[in-house]
Image (tube, rainbow, N blue to C red; front, side):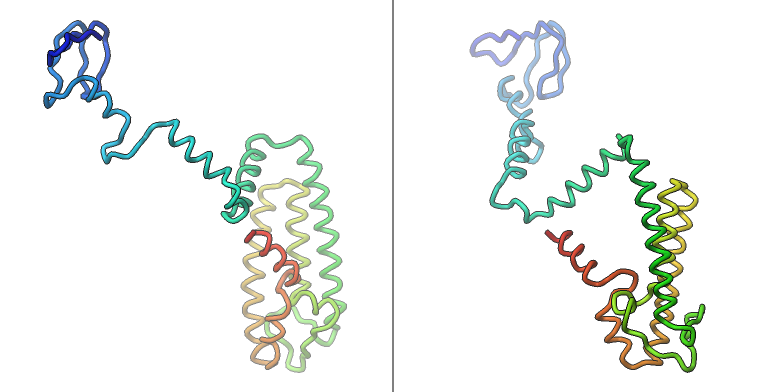
Length: 227
């Protein structure tokens, strides 16, 4: 681009577009509002609101934010790392994932069946009922496995269902396991409401013991996600 000194007009020999949005080839242009081409071009480095949109400046700001040692571990970095790792694994699943999924699934099935069996044994035949309404002569059991989980039989069914779905990698089983989780959660809500009506000390028991998993384990996981 050639411009005569002290002139307000410039000759453009190559096809280009300036900051004013003018296309030309070998034509004389009068810059808008009497501004020089250099002034118009300078407007391209800022947005309409005057903010700096320079790519390098933005990248430098982001890098400083990510590498700030004073804020490390206080901004929920674990969530971002988990998001990144899971996203990459979805796009590029490891070859060993199927074997790991099967192993975890089998462990879930075995553990779930054991937990459900412990629940049946711990509650006793005189308290056992498949319905959410407790028996008229039911007793509140808070010892044994019921000292760790309020609903070990439901929890055992859920662990087994999710384990089988993971081991078989069957999408239908995954959806059915999700449906069973929602159903048993609602059933447990109703059962606990009626248990509270029958046993005055049930609400305190419910505060101290987890529903489908030990409360200490849930607290540990919660602390990890907050870090």
